[in-house]
Length: 277
Image 1: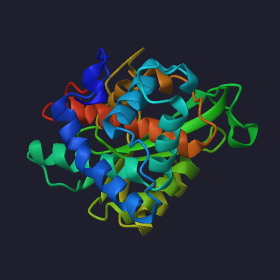
Image 2: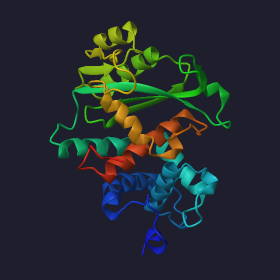
Image 3: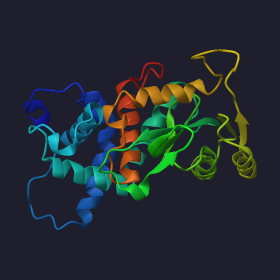
């Protein structure tokens, strides 16, 4: 009986089917790590329990040290999360699930178009000031999360910067990374925060960047063609309370928390991209 079967389950726990999607990637990671470890024969931490703990924290928004005692120690869970962030395991897991969902939706594994957007979010007092900035337009002191999604709204790329970095500058970095990671993409839709420099940069990479403005004749909320997909993606990840504010000391750790939210959503409803919460 595994540790997760010995305790009362939490709503954020992985089902057997969801764990089956993640287990090969995490088991392969452990196998590689054991090749260089001393292997002193100590207790082996259950990887499913570690992932359950991380998803619990991400969904509820609690601090690391507030993890319930029926999970592995919070220091152990944080160590695994840090290692998976540093070596790209979380990113690799997201790519695997993204391709799986696209194929189940009858799409090719690699997209040909994407949508880009950004949000500035306040940071916690514990976040180093040298990783923050002020978004003058939104009047927010904190960090900015930029995401790239495909036309289904599934995450392709996450980047965290100081909030003072303009959408235009972040957009150029994102387009460069998109061209490298997803060379099949030739079209990108953005909002009016992305100016001529980003558009011209995209053109040099073979990506046609199209600015889609809001309808100024409509007051309040309105669905913006193409861009509504990425706005919905922000709603999906905001179901995870850890992402309501940036609590992470390192920007890379917040990128992982965003990726983990999308991974949880993908694994929960991989057959229905219209209801991923």
